[in-house]
Length: 260
Image (cartoon, rainbow, N blue to C red):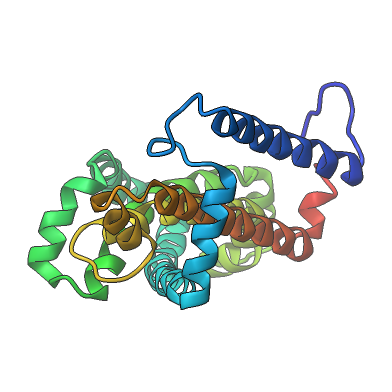
């Protein structure tokens, strides 16, 4: 992959990234310390930290994180287990593309938030409804991303398999899927980031637990420090899962890394 101006060492990369975070934190600290913005609209970082510490000490923070992670794990896993094979088939066969791709394109433009009242009618307000929102928000996007990853496999490689007399099933399993796997993994990593958005949406309405529920409750009582604190927690959790996925991808697909 092209990098204009050359690459930088990992140490320098981490240093630049950390500097940006420190810069934003410093700006936040200066603005709130000088009360350029009223605390009810933007509390200071110390106030947010103290509030998160209280929630952590009471156990509420850990409970909210665990329930939201559980909902993401189930909803995202169900979406991925269906999206990957369907996406590969759409990318490999024109008949599958004609049958599934237009419908998938049609549904993915529907706003997920519009499905919230419907999912409550269909599944009630328990965890199944939360799984369904995450599934709707990630499945259709994943199908199209995986389809594109599959289409990027060079036809010359597929033709070699046909020349060797391999059947379609063997070509899919031994040529197309391994070649598309690094891209599919990246697509999963991207859609996992969306899952964090949809779990909050699912928990904002008709929920009694989770990060989104806590944000809604805090909004009712003007607890801005709790809202900002939980937003930061969500960003941290999303960043951690993204970096873990990147790390695992580099280990599983070393052959792809060597070509970048």
